[in-house]
Image 1 (cartoon, rainbow, N blue to C red):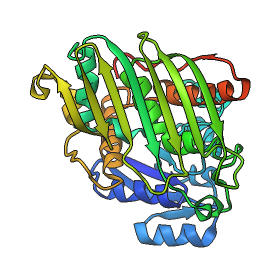
Image 2 (cartoon, rainbow, N blue to C red):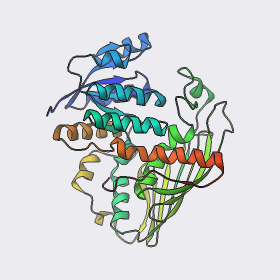
Image 3 (cartoon, rainbow, N blue to C red):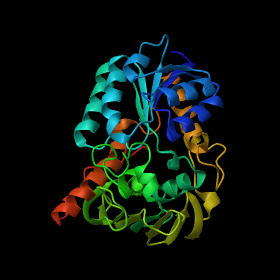
Image 4 (cartoon, helix red, strand yellow):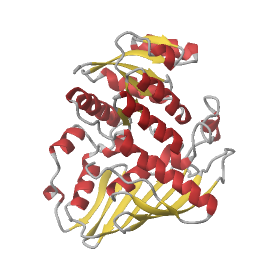
Length: 351
């Protein structure tokens, strides 16, 4: 099994650049190609990062010795590109959300399985020492019986943000949703992962301040798989970006995370007494509160390459990553129907 990977990135936009910068500091992988249909942007990206430019993923897949494709394009494009990469025998790393429909989720997972390649999804917020400490605290009973888990994401996005790059954001066809599917998906993922999955969902969504197809404000309530209750509230209409907050309440205490760092530890068990696994320490190695955006991408990418090299399942495989999308699709269904929807997203128990 190769211990060094030649990587191609699909998409030369902001997130594609984040991945390219991360690859610069990972010694087990090299960026060799970028696929970008906007010729000027693609050529400029290729020149800056010293790689070849192709007009499409299909063309990029012909690049000699390509091992891995990172998908950093608008969300609605992920399934088709992932299937092409899988059929060409390339491992796949995709940005969140991995897909925006159940058909897309199913197709990506099936294509990777049929081809015998790995499919991993970027959920870098999990790779925080403090987030992992909360996960293990729940598992080790430090909170007693969890009874509530709430998340809040209040961010600001301008009309110009939604209109940029062809206006794909805030559309059902390419963004798959609004404040939930694009921004708050990380918070939804943390909630369902920390609590072991979601059993049922009720919700409301609205579009209050932007001229977009999808929601810019949402509120949903959960019944988690463990019987606890909870909620997610999210908006891109706030005055500014406020810290993203996750709060877990149990019969023996309460813990609050803000931007993936613990801000309240009201638990009898000391934080230092929570046992992290060797994998936890490896995943969060180098994490610091308030670190720049992209640092978590580098940690997860490094862990994915290490896993593939050793024949292990990469951190947050597609079969697990779909849980957050399934939750959000259920939120949208519940908001449209006004009825409670049974959740399909249950996190991998070993995550």
